Image 1 (cartoon, helix red, strand yellow):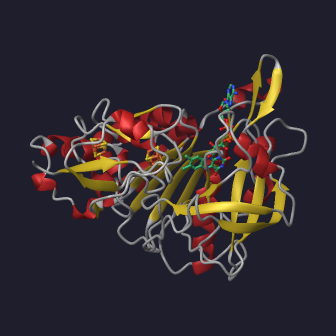
Image 2 (cartoon, helix red, strand yellow):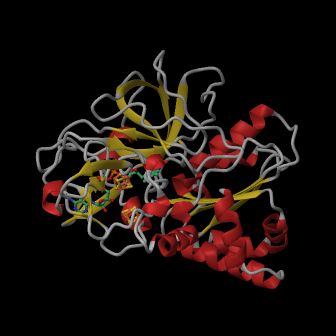
Length: 405
Ligand SMILES: Cc1cc2nc3c(=O)[nH]c(=O)nc-3n(C[C@H](O)[C@H](O)[C@H](O)COP(=O)(O)OP(=O)(O)OC[C@H]3O[C@@H](n4cnc5c(N)ncnc54)[C@H](O)[C@@H]3O)c2cc1C
Ligand code: SF4
Ligand code: SF4
């Protein structure tokens, strides 16, 4: 009997974020129900497009089996079965994969899922602490960073890791395990939050990190509810203990090269990784020529996290465009989205796109991607470039990164 190397998702590590399903170029190769994400052995082409984007590494599991586990088998798992032999994707011989692997790899290069980390990025640590073995962090601060009284409640939360090892890089995320059980009587799934501080701590030299958490609210049958994870986080008090997993993310990282330009586009809490990257640049000093340009969208200035402190960041460090999509009636004419403001800075953006040392990062609401892409298309067209060619050149060099949720 021919042995098969089967691609599997570890249900204990998977946080059900759907990233793998979005990045898989093969319709139906990854599917899910309310419990598990699973890989269809008959459809999966071993193209690896799902590996890098998975924030937890749950998807990077491969077992040698005589007969493939069925979808039903995988849906029934609370943990991976005992492996006869476990290998990681690094050991997979791409040439030996399915015959149409080349086509799929070609497709994978087009998708943001296949983008590697920047060439000069530091090597990240991932998945050091798991749901089974989380680290306990202590809350040392929880401050509202949107104005009191406005609908959007965003918090700057500082977690102290004490003497426990939790090395992070700007652009990575951590997982939070909300206490309690879900409606099915199972522990809540991990919620991911981007790290908003620099690698050497929110306070330099301290083993702590900052997050920006937005309280999610929604209505069911006229009754107001709040998100399980974000509500828990936003209500934390100084001294509270939080169960943390991670760190996660191995590609959405900043280049260490001080001459690299960072073009950062975000909405809401999507600014978190950019706060970390800006702080990192500020701390290492101005030895390089790299520019940092930020487009940051919110509904109003009162709802833009860090609106006050951001005004004080010198333009020489961060060229920032704060953009508001919902102004009062009197200010209706100022209503604008990040993609609109990008067009107003077309000349500067075009210059950055022509520079082979520019890195693009997009983070925030899923809905922002299409508009931002359109603006890039127009800026390129007006400046003698083809956006699709530009993007295709950026991607394999780890210079185009998207993280939207
Ligand atoms: C890589 C990554 C980074 C992230 N970084 C950040 C960050 O820096 N800051 C941040 O604030 N968030 C971030 N998020 C989002 C975060 O992980 C959570 O998804 C978010 O906080 C919502 O989780 P929650 O538990 O509060 O909401 P949930 O309780 O999971 O609810 C989410 C939504 O589900 C719906 N819903 C839930 N239950 C019901 C119900 N009974 N009936 C009807 N509808 C329902 C509602 O629409 C609700 O808004 C990130 C996500 C990813 C993937
Ligand atoms: S390896 Fe490729 S085909 Fe298989 S699940 Fe991942 S993205 Fe889909
Ligand atoms: S954690 Fe990884 S395997 Fe699980 S849904 Fe997200 S991307 Fe897929």
